[in-house]
Each structure stands twice: as C-alpha cells, then as structure tokens.
Amino acid sequence: MPKIKLAPSILSADRSKINSEIKQVEEYSDLVHVDIMDGIFVPPTTIDAEFVSKIKTKVPLDVHLMVHEPSNSYIQGFIDAGAASITIHVEGCNDPMKQINYIKSKNVKAAISIKPKTSVDAIKKYLDHVDMVLVMTVEPGWGGQSFIPEMMDKVRELRKLKPKIDIEVDGGINHITAGISRDAGANVFVAGNYIFGDKDRAAAAKRLLDSLHKSQ
Image 1: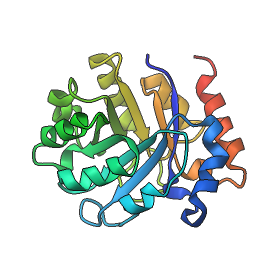
Image 2 (image 1 turned 120 degrees about the vertical axis):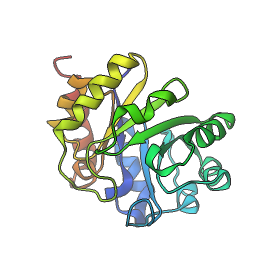
Image 3 (image 1 turned 180 degrees about the vertical axis):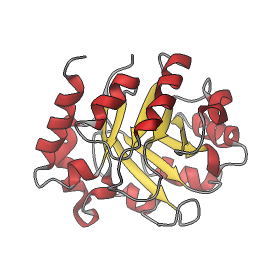
C-alpha cells in the first residue's frame, strides 16, 4: 500500500491566524487540506484563491474543490496560489476529464472525489488518469460530522482496483476511524475538527499519526 499521509484540514482552523495554526502541525503533516466551497455544489461558501495564496507553509497544499463546474481560470487561480494537488468532484463536473486534463497539463496532481451516495462505478473510467481518489466519509459541506462506516466498502473496492493509487478519506476522521479507514485500504487521512478542535494541535496530530502507524 502507498505511504500513509496525514492531511490536517484548515476548515476547522482559526483563519485569522492561519499560518500559525498550520505551523503547529507542520511537523506531522504530509499535506495541508484546503476545502473550497462555492455555495452551489454545497450550501456553505468558504475561502477563495486569494486567501490560499497567503498560506505560507513548506507542506504541499491539497486543494479540494467542492465546486460546481470549476472553469480552467478558476482552477488556475488555485494553481497560482500554490496548490500541489487539486481534487474535483465527479458529481460537480459535466465532463470531469476536462478538469483532470487541465490540472495535469499544469504539472499539478489531479484527484477525483465521490460523495457518500455516489458509487465507485461513477469514477472507474477516470482512475487511470488521476493521482488520488477522495472518498467522502460524510456528506460534504460542514466540518464536525460523524464518520459513515459503510463508505469503507468503496475504499476496499478502490484498493482492489488500484493497489498503488492514493486513497484519501475525509469526514469524521479521528484516532479510531482513521484506523478503520487504514485497514480498509485508505492511506491519506484528512482531519479537521480532531486536530484544530484540540487546544494542543500538535499533540492531536501526533496522536492521530501514531494511531495510524500502530499494528500495521
């Protein structure tokens, strides 16, 4: 299985001091997960490319577009802001290959995501063209939701189909659900509330990482 990676999500961080928030967990982070919501694909709206451009970290930015039909210029804004990888939703794009091809043409990693009610079948034809698949383990839109264990069937199916691809899980990830996800075949773990909801962000990130490396 590919390397285990921790991706703290800044959705639950204090945006007014975002760089110091990230700094606290950098040592334990392989990626920094950046959720972008447009108020159309999901009801909330969040940060934009201008905000992302102000993030200063040595950790690669993993930008998750919960966005309806992101255009090339919209995607380019996040590439210019420093994104190392960009995830689109299969449900949000009429022809996901257009967005995947554009992202890849800019030497940025491309990923595709599925919501809880979407089956793996919806993305099978894209698996040879992306670097990562994101399985949402909650309905996208809000932080702090409860993990949906039935999503592990999708993770197992994907791992069987693509033994070497990065499989990311996002939603309700803590030191218990991370282990469940890892055992199903996930290797990239997004955690927001668990890390940034703790007074000691570094301790929470370390605890989560330690739990992932236990009994492998």
